[in-house]
Image (cartoon, rainbow, N blue to C red; front, side, top):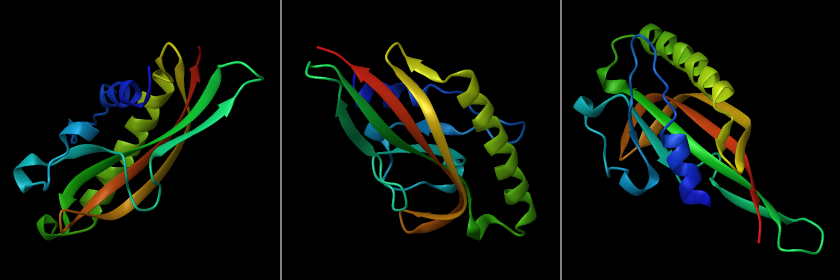
Length: 149
């Protein structure tokens, strides 16, 4: 198990709407930039400004068993601000995407045999990536993992 396995499980979550079917880039395959023809994309980020991804451990009693709290940032980039002629379409699409993401999380809380999603923080807005601003959604997952032995 471990953080890489959890990233893989989050990457496997299917999140689509009638208008949004993002390509997923896991932490080990994130492009340096996102071109317009690549959009929409989900970037599983080990780092992101507002909610840095990472881990915290709590040991249970005196043994080797531990509980890890993981945070993973799943950033949707929908379209660049330069591509948008109005704000209405991106906002409507992002709201639908959040509904689909929340449904996917509820249906797949148990990511692995030892890890479960326990929280989700959602932020909609403008996000910068590779020097370009995009309309997007930052989904920060909190995941607890039981580690033994």
